[in-house]
Length: 205
Figure 1 (cartoon, rainbow, N blue to C red):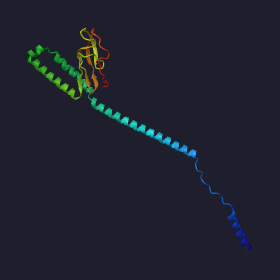
Figure 2 (figure 1 turned 135 degrees about the vertical axis):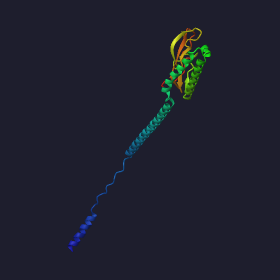
Figure 3 (figure 1 turned 45 degrees about the vertical axis):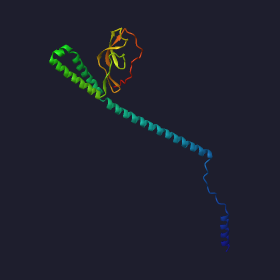
Figure 4 (figure 1 turned 180 degrees about the horizontal axis):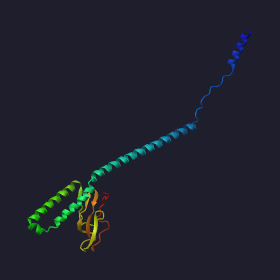
């Protein structure tokens, strides 16, 4: 009996003993939460900026490649065309070397000249199909973008710097210079305005 009462008293003492408090995670301070939000917003803005820059660079690269492909297509014949200009020059020289009176007096020479003229016309037509065009230089104001001065000719009747002779025709392909016209320019006449008659042309071919 005494033992039972002792056990009951021990149980009651155990129940009355204070229980340890349950640990709770402290709530974050308001300042720390705001700082974290600001940090995340800054990182998001940085990533957005990097993304926009990458997209812009990709678009620029795409456009650059498209332009390069277009240029390759447009100017692929430039080197070949430049070589063919020599053929055109020789055809023109052959025609100018035959005096008109000999051409009319000799049927053989006349037939050969007609054949050369036809060949020259066909070559010029082929040039036109490839957007290769002759530069009109005679009588024009000297333009360093289109003309190459080979000599000067004293001529007070014309403004200084006027093209008075074309020794080799110049050509453009699309909007680029294929070959400058080789010309003679006048001197001794009235002076023109600086830059008068000049054209802007791409010379990168």
